[in-house]
Length: 255
Image (tube, rainbow, N blue to C red; front, top):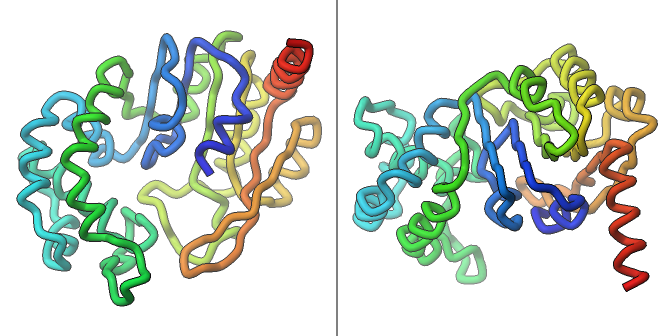
């Protein structure tokens, strides 16, 4: 899914991701000259800061962390030790069914030999932390109100990829620590419509988005949600992003 989103990004030098979450798009896209990532969840932000600033210490702790339900349960307890709290948050992101970080969705474990290799994959995380650390060294990490941050970066050269908490009507349970109501989604849309540069907005199809973004380009892709349910991912491109992608495609064809 991340690569599909990246494939719809026009060329840019400044990148802003105001709803960072797991950072799947950021970690897979080419590096930009200026990059800013943001998440209002302080524990999640701390985890990425520790990955950037103390990768060796965090990797050592993770290497000694067994893949266990007890560690998953412990991840919900907050500690003042920032490195330890980063380890706990990382275990929650990795051990939770569906990667949920808010509610206890359950411990993700292997039952069938044909299932996901959860333990083997977890054992590769220490090396992955070192790679992530190198990526984060040149990135600004914010913990700020997303809408205020978008307005602060309102410049033509700034590409925004927004992946906000999906509208509650489009899913079955709470998945985010900081949810957004319908009014907040309306406000987000207005702020994004005012942005001078290219914008990509992820979500599920909903009348609010369909009515408010009629002049944006909508592309869709089939996906599989938690429990194997089939969903359709939607990606809206504002007029500037769509036009720049069209120009890029024509240029590629001419070449």
